[in-house]
Length: 399
Image (cartoon, rainbow, N blue to C red):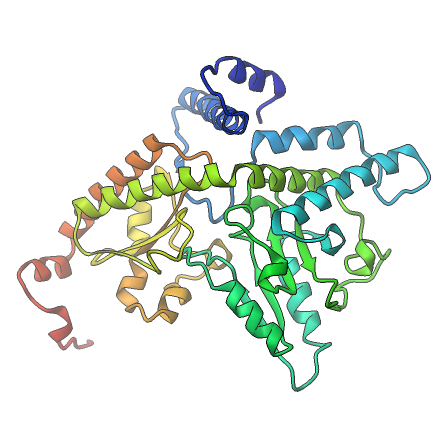
């Protein structure tokens, strides 16, 4: 990973940047590019190359500034944050509470409403499984993803939240793909519970947070028993370095959200336009307006998605959610939208993030166009379409 010396060298090489916020962002981008060049030089020595990374919905690289914030608590300040009798514990507790406030500030919450967890999956389970045991038979729970992780569509969370509050129904949202990328205000949205994961916002893996509303109070039961940490909701020692990393990632995301969004939107439009201007029968899945631009899901008609992924081995992409990647079934999200099974099988998800470059987008688009055309030339279905045959009019028989 990048160290402080490299960061200073990169910062020293920059000039003509007047905005401190832009300067910090550009420094981080340059730092990651420096890491990429270092990795590339090592791989060239071994005569092998790593693929370009275009799967930011699966996970994100850690921002070097997050690592800088974490390192002191990995090496020097290693006290248990729950040790109240000496300075080591006080130092860690102070860092943990600062991180808690950084997470709360990102989503417009009170820091007392933030519970540290191992990630969004645990937060989801705490919210849903245990809450189901506390509600009455005549009540229900609504749980909706803020931003879908396969097609990037944004749900009308505020409208849903107000409706649930008017019906006295608990409302949980999984904001793993939304936190740090779009503005969030849990009070205005009337959200009762919200799940967040650090590794989706350039933070460390293995840590996340659960927002639990205090007024009106939401009561949930802990998944596990133990020392009663995190107000008895999540027993176990909070890993201070990981919590600090989550807090730093949230603070950086809040400061640079507008810049990141413009950068990602520009690259997303560039990728879509390059691909669609060169090929027909390419569909953008999901609402073209109400979506997070960094998650692009395209269906390439008459091409098998898995075959395209294998052909694009020098670009790290996916055909859907990493959470369900063990299944070869077509995306349940696309099927639920009414997408034909053949188009659902031909979908590819392109993930663009903070450190993606124009050169990477251009290379990905060019390789994608090249390989789709090659695979279509091998497809008898594509040949029939070019001859004007309506595939839906054909009655297929099984042997």
